[in-house]
Image (cartoon, rainbow, N blue to C red; front, side):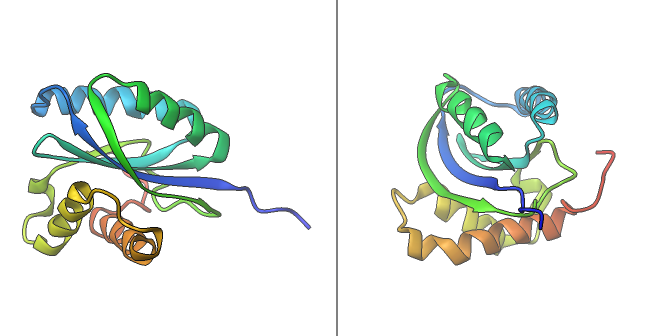
Length: 152
């Protein structure tokens, strides 16, 4: 019997230490997508008001190495790892990295509210965050078609 591949999913919030306009976010997206594709890591990055909320997933060792690199990036300060857990299936297999902003979620105020709450909370407990954080990630996936291969 084959053993399921152990994957790791991490969600973290960070504070930008540099300005990120549209051009800077596009450059960050391209750089991260290229690096992540080579690692086999997928996910997305949400940005608003100098705050990042990122979800990454992939093979345990690859995500661990990427997270160590992310924590050393001088463009932001990782304030809190909201969730870090093992998983057996990807939520965003088609996204090596996507940068999302509020305009992409027009009319979805509750989703934006949930992101902002997570980004601003100092330290939610694992019990409080567990179910709601995966619901949030799945809502992003469902709204933006993360499961479907995309040419975007």
